[in-house]
Length: 150
Image (cartoon, rainbow, N blue to C red):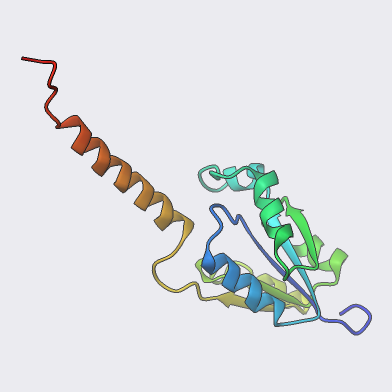
């Protein structure tokens, strides 16, 4: 707490921004007075999964354009110990695909919420759908007769 204000932190890659990203940020906004949103840098993301489709600067600009965050910062590490101390974070919100990963923050007095994304929509599912549609279209084109060949 800082100046009697509850400080909430949420973070993510926010690649190919979609409605579940927005829902988590809205949820985090409702848990306190000041909302800080961390956007994972490209280097951080590449340390544990495939590179994002959307570059860091663009992902950060999208989050900054939202009305919910008070502050948007780069996220350089998955260890939030120092960040919690430096920014006086009281509440930490992350998607439930990270269930249990941030329980250690409770030892620092932080309330941790794992936001349930729900089934269906994710960046991974969007990427898969794009690839599937591309393959389907490619297969249709590849099997068309060529009128110039006799």
